[in-house]
Image 1 (cartoon, rainbow, N blue to C red):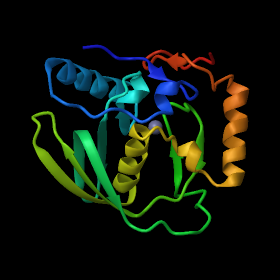
Image 2: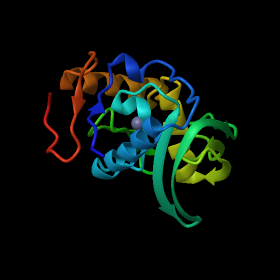
Image 3: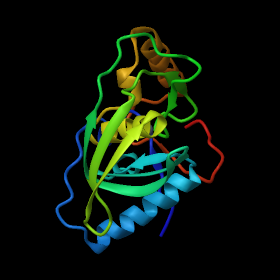
Length: 187
Ligand code: ZN
């Protein structure tokens, strides 16, 4: 097992749809172990396979809230979400970040409710009806598997700021990554 490098925005692996997992092999089991390690080390509340350069439909998450503790893998996930409210995002309570846009945070409206259906590491299908932050995490990670980053969903003003920040960091090109556990350095 090892901590993997996290791919930074601009690499095609983050901007294209990932492929379904056809068999939960030793390769997949090892990959998922590495994903947990990398998520914990980063640290983050979720990590999708394309973020470590693997274009497969897998994400892991780790979140504790009033409704309980949730730590699992979602293989070939499907997501149903409640209606998205058309309003400005709350810059105090709806601020999101992403390990592939490290250090930056922007507010974004997400659906309040989401139903995740996925396979676990044994291949058993499970369902979670999530609300609030857990629903947000599921939407964020599910988006990664569709080739979407949260910055792609920001409103005009925030997207402008995000693109400016990405440019200032020198990101937006293929092959950039950072290593969790080491101090984050500008590439
Ligand atoms: Zn992310």
